Image 1: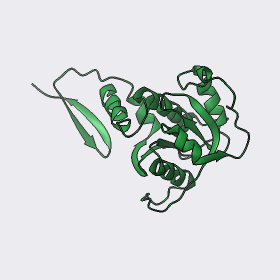
Image 2: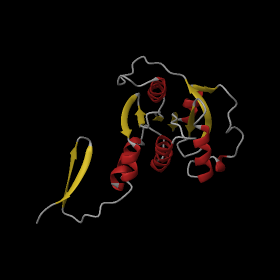
Image 3: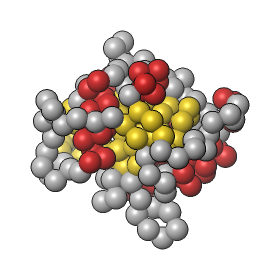
Length: 198
C-alpha cells in the first residue's frame, strides 16, 4: 500500500506541477488529521494549495492580517511538528493556506479568487471546492480541500482527481501480513486482499 501511495504522489507532482511528493504527502497527512479530528469538538474545513506559490499568491488575498507573515521559513515547514499544530489552529479561521512546492507554509487565511466558469464539479460541492478547483485550473498548484463532511478532496488542473476518506487513509498505513501469492480485488470501492490457495 505504501508503494501505491508513493506512486500517486509522484504522479500528482509530475513535471507540470512543481511540488515534492514528500511535501504533498505531509500536507495530506495534516488534511486527513483535520478532517478526522476537527478542532475543539467540531468539524472544520479548509483549503491547502501546494506548488506554484507565486501565481497562487497573486490570485488570492487575506482579509485579516496574515498570522504567518514575518516568521522565518525554517519554522513554517509542514514537516515541523509545531507548525502542524499551528496549521490545525489556523484552519479554524476563514480562508486557506498557500504552501510552497518545497514545503514552507507561506500564508494562511487566504481567500482564493474563484470562478466556476469551465469547471466540471459534481453537484453538492460548495464554494470551498469551487475555489480549490478554480485555483488549480488557473495555476500549476494542487489544491486540497478538507470538507466539513470529513472528506479530503484533491484538485489538479481544475478537476477533482482524488477523494480520501480519513479512516481508510489511516488504515492504509498498515502493511498487509499476507505472504505472496495473494489476490487484490476492489469491491464497492474497498480493496480486499486474499491469499491465493496453492
